[in-house]
Image (cartoon, rainbow, N blue to C red):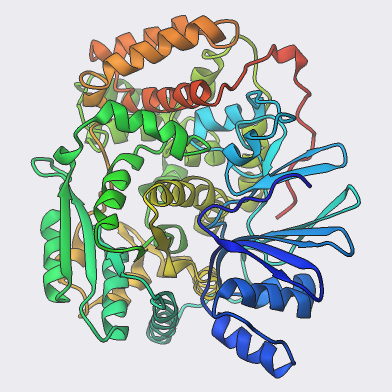
Length: 590
């Protein structure tokens, strides 16, 4: 093994009798329970940290200890006497863990840049990772955008001993349990009990703590249960978009006032140097993500840092309970695909005549993209609606065909089925850890903020998987069970409002303040990577956007993010013929 670095974690702790050392990043919310049990079994403690609890639990139960932990973590444990290394990652992938194997050596860390430190690690762009990134806006595990560096999957541990490596799954994301609960009243009570328990555990902290508010039911639910469990008023934080149709400030303020929180607010206009902030993402994002929500999240973290060190967020509820428009789109598309082809042709022709709008959330943008997705296979369409480039568009960006890593990933979804449980399972397995949680972890840690998502307690996740689909989506109603649970608790306006989320005016930005940075980045990248990317096609895309013949601000965002990251970390492109082909079977079965 070569590198141990787990960012944001406690200092390594050594157990002298066993010669075992631990490096730990994260939080274990039931560590006091575990500590009491371990003490009853004769284990001695010399600190109050959960890091020591994890160490002693490992010494007592070995890798079985990970099934006993509730929390978020990336952990490395090295035993000198047996020359054995064990790495592990939490069930939902809230915390990151990367590794690279070179012969008998294993390099690992919680950041790609940690592994980059070693001179033996080449920095070649992974074609498998790129194939996924250009379509999804993120790279699903086990891939990364660097050839030979992988992500340890959520819910897995890895052992290195004498150059031999093996991995094992200690927790599997539930899929289609036999029991499908469909008893509203009893189910709501059980969900309330689980959330109350999870939020209470997540509130344990010896540093200032707050809650991120977005004006929706998820974060407002966190504030409700946190207020119940807290003896003093809580601090809340939000970003406002004054002057925008998607500004959620009125809902946020209503919730903050109802629960008497000490509320802090920052407007998007307070972002003084937009291009400079985007360039900083290349360093702090570690592995690039084309999720443009990083911008408001950057401001939110900056605001939070002034007042709190730990915050609770509503992350995960959309994936558990069916909160995304893509979930409804995937269900609706089943009916649209039954229409005669001429009817779909007519709808698309009509939509193309609509004027180009500046906002991603405009009706024309949604309808055009939805109809395009209805031409695709169900699995491909589901990720297209939340991604960017289609397969045809992607092929035009590089000199030769890319390997079908995306197809390998989508094969799992296609095998899972064309229904709501399948889409929720897929989003929890890939979109949640590799996009949403990656973005939140990197941006918050850049500001020394720890973000805790109580919805992702594995007991809540397992409960959600047991629900009947009608308790998640009914027609246009989404997150049905969560909203029914919070009826008469949250303001009616919050429960009935349309979901918007953190969005940014990307289309406008690339026609204004971000265009100089984009053109500079493209020109610089063309000088180094013209034998790999088709920069003539990319520039044509940029020109179409500038002339308002197309709205591709989010496509350009992904390309800008990628090329800035490649420049920062000196990532090289190599001839496609030199890349090894994608193995026939990359992913485990469902």
